Image (cartoon, rainbow, N blue to C red; front, side):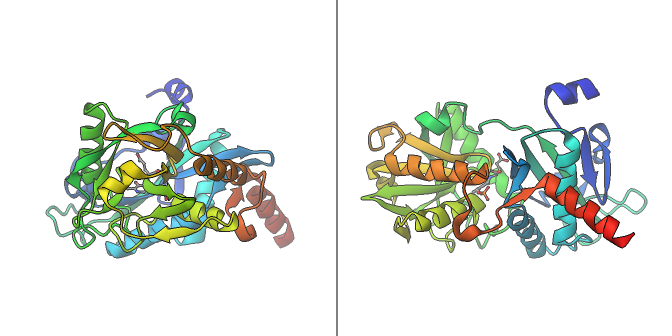
Amino acid sequence: MSTKDVKTMRIAPKVWRNGEFIDWGNARVHVMTHAIHYGSSVFEGIRAYNTERGTAIFRLTEHIQRLLNSAKVYRMDITYNREELCQAAVELVRGGGMEECYLRPIIFRGLNEEKPAFGVYPLHNPIDCYIAAWDWGKYLGEEAIESGVDVCVSSWTRTPANSLPAVAKAGANYMNSQLIKMEAVLGGFVEGIALDDRGYVSEGSGENIFLVNNGKLITPPLGASILPGITRDSVIAIARELGIEIVETSIQRAALYLADELFFTGTAAEITPIRSVDRITVGAGKRGEITKQLQDVFFDVIYGRRPAPNNAPWLTYVNDAEEKKTATASAKE
Ligand code: PPE
């Protein structure tokens, strides 16, 4: 891929790999890489937004911490700590020349070409750590944020947490997500919602889910087979601030049809309303009032127009970090 293609596709020209920046075109792996055969990767998805004070990365620390947690579950020893990975992400965004982007840190079991190790047992394989970035528009379609999406309940069951722990955002989990997503899209839906092994609602292939009933917000609990979504957490914090009651409980499939409002949350999906499930119209069949209220506050927070709940430091301004670094450098001189 030429630099021109990278530019037209709006991909950051550099990729951070194991502590250094390399060209996008050189960010390659060998076919015998452990992760390709056995799904041994953990990753994150993070968005950076163009605020009035310049580009800011949303909840960077929490995302990098979840990445490290995912790695810990799979016994992957990382040479970089949370601060170093956050710094790498900031530098990638700053150097990428994109005002807004989606960041994809990924840690996987690679291949030592001098001393290759094959087979499932992973601990003889090296750990590789990358961060790439590109400009990712609206995940579920340009219109989705306003008009909502049509979804189905998947015939696939979400992987139980004792098979693949949902707390870890592992590449392998996304084989389950792909089954859900393909079935949905080929069936004429935008997304699929998976039930868990007990038959209760879990989440979309790449989003958490919320219902609104009688003004209350209802969502599956973290103990269920769901990714502990950072957008989910942000929406809960915002709802608390707005005085909206939150109930974390098991949800039956039919409750999806009967909800007043329904929406997805996720880094890529942000807050996307759902207007029908299995072709049954949800509520008024368009974005509901509470969904809109939460979206408005959420977008104000991510664009730095309003402080995060409890003034939490949710935004990392990439140019501030540069100022801080320069200040530290000159203080050292
Ligand atoms: N559940 C799943 C299964 C999931 O993949 C995501 C994020 C979420 C919930 C929401 O988590 P959070 O982003 O922390 O609010 N899915 C990411 C990957 C999507 C993709 O296609 O790749 C994302 O939204 O970035």
